Length: 311
Image 1 (cartoon, rainbow, N blue to C red):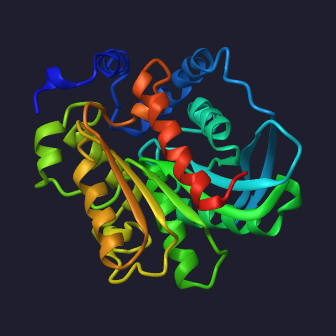
Image 2: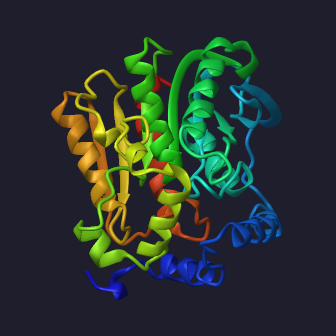
């Protein structure tokens, strides 16, 4: 595929992002996190309306975790989607993914609980996994606080897609909360520098250096990279995990890893829907100026509705 085949709206969004390159150092990371706050505030002006939002904290294994609950219009109990944001395990927050969570709430009719987990490199693996799983356990035990039916799905994009997949695996292997679905949006799983998607698309949103830096910050050791709870493609058997929707983007270096995990799920008998958005790039479902992002959110929300039986 040629770069000029990328959706023009997505190309424009990528050009804007390129003005803020990743720093590849702890000092630069601190600065980038700082300057991203006003950018996030600007992005979130005039947000899509939902029934209500509730900011709160929930208990985590190392302290309180910030969370935001998005409730749909209407008063009845609804299923809950526990959402984990992307950002390479080192960036991102509830704020950076506010628009996506609002749209997912509106399109699915579910409550969405967006959770801030501990970030690397200050908190490397398995801190984020522990926080994500604790959030799902809390959601399962506090249905009333979420105005929920008790039906729970997990979701996330990029690094958050990894955490959603891992959480589903941890729950299945440890008699944890029963999950109805896992929504994995261009998940950071099964990445290999020899993959065609990496060779062809590195440098579009994510460079090879970016991916290597994210991995070094999060995993810390090559030993951890082989842990199934760091990357579920390392698991010998995923047959017990929740049914899945896996989304990839045609111009994303992570495309082939996500596709491989979808194939692994299918091979182990897990009901799985896989969708590749050919003209899209990594991160496209957070790009509110991209029409295809709106369409994709509606598409995946339909899968969540089917899985959770939203009325």
